[in-house]
Amino acid sequence: MILVGVSLSVLVLAGCKPIPPPTPLAQLNEQQAHGHDVFQSHCGSCHNDRRNGALNGPSLRGTFKKEYLPSGAPANDERVVSTIRFGRGMMPPMAGTMDSGDLDDLMAYLHTL
Ligand code: HEC
Image (cartoon, rainbow, N blue to C red):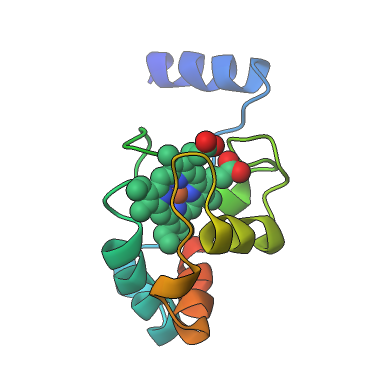
């Protein structure tokens, strides 16, 4: 208990608030659940979604609960959609790999992380 208190205050002092956990998979609506499937087939090989820690790319846990993306760009839909469409650095452009319905569902899922 004391240890938990101490580490929480360290986080707060460091100005890095603990972010709330992702919505449990069992509580996702139909669109978000389909977005989870799209994530697993298109993104999961390079990104963690439900836990921290980088794979090929940074973890996407809490993407929209933070102010900035790992690159320092603002964490908003526009930036994330364009990263998915056009790629970034070692991340390939993925515009051609999914239709706009899949992209919308994926975005709905990313908002639950
Ligand atoms: C082949 C591996 C790979 C795949 C597949 C991939 N990514 Fe990435 N992603 C990366 C890498 C590497 C980076 C870091 C790019 C950089 O900043 O140089 C990245 C960065 C990102 C970022 C952060 C951008 C920023 O501005 O910091 C987001 C958001 C992202 N990816 C989302 C996704 C989503 C959503 C998918 C699935 C549609 C996906 N990625 C698929 C490798 C991948």
